Length: 185
Image 1: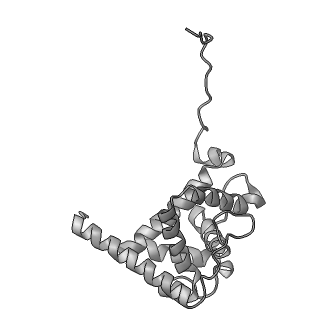
Image 2 (image 1 turned 30 degrees about the vertical axis):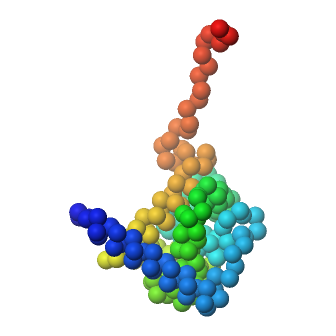
Image 3 (image 1 turned 45 degrees about the vertical axis):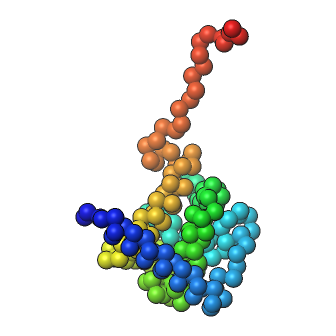
């Protein structure tokens, strides 16, 4: 599908409007009043932890977390996501948090096709159905949201050294020392 410049700008304006309306509704209903990070995190708020924690098993696999991390998998992924979010510039971080606010508010969550109950009660099947509805949506903003969420979660998951093996990544290159000592010429 070929996208014109005008179509791209319209899509951006629609996405901004949707996030603004969603965040405004979340603030008016009192659902996004928590702006402080959850305990043990620098940027992730409690509602973000529940949202990302519910989606992660559905994004990574239908059976849970792959790899050798075991019971620490969820916490390690959330810590990696938190670390990644601390590297975002102010505007990008606020836009991402607005999207998370949209998913944290009961009113806006239902409007975008998410489960009726809070994310901490969502099953892997419900999270998978939500992601599939966004992936297959006729709205480009939902498809972009699906791609962004999946990339965010998979990058943070597979960037952990314990998960290198399951992705086929041999690890970062080992620096080979130069055979001759440096001279101070």
